Length: 332
Image 1 (cartoon, rainbow, N blue to C red):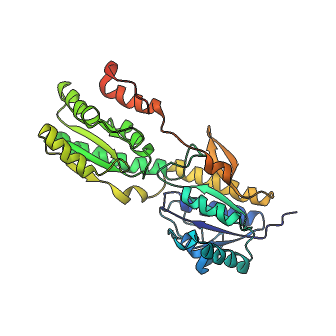
Image 2 (image 1 turned 60 degrees about the vertical axis):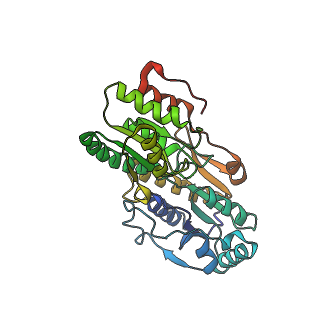
């Protein structure tokens, strides 16, 4: 017999395309199990301030294709304190919540772990364009963000080719290079700079531009992960080293917006469904992730201890596509 009668759902941290699809899946799956669903607005901060809305099948009826999150999102310094977390617990008790589905990234799940230690069961659903959650191969929003960046860079390439210029493009990813590397391969970048690979400016930038020019190219595309540093600084260094006048573009938060693509809608729907299923079957305090394309359920503490490394083979592929047999194997 299902003892879960009412759950909350929230989105926290940076928004990602597909968060709404996950919220929709949580609500409709909960209702199919006879579980009431309460939307907690503005993440963990909303749980502290009792900012909530009752969610129905109709209220999530047209959000599958919408970017952003109808529940809003925020980062809460107050939730990092014991006093803040106790206020959150009080809200859960007042609303009669038997558990929380938390949609977000690593910071969201660390908050979930603290709440679970205070007796509130939590199931995490990974959603971040950075794809840097260690326990899962894929996070909701990554593919849409990649496609947004690729579309922008393809347009930049047109004008860079016309004017025979160098373009330096900064993409998001915080301290991880997954987004930059994936995008760099997809657009055929001259060079991709990621935080996991120690920057050797002469080798990683100057020599690659030089080799590309010797191969007959007259325009160059440098993709920089934000965790490496400022694309503006990279542009200045290119100017000093090669006498070029690079054009710098910081894509910024445009990568977080827009309608989620098919992969993110489908993945978000599956993850949201299995998050509620875990509660309905008497399990909690876990994170739903993907391994080899299949969904897996991992205890929160175990999941947070897992690390994800940038795939060495992707970096080697990127270099090989640019320089062929002259590629130097990396140690990423």
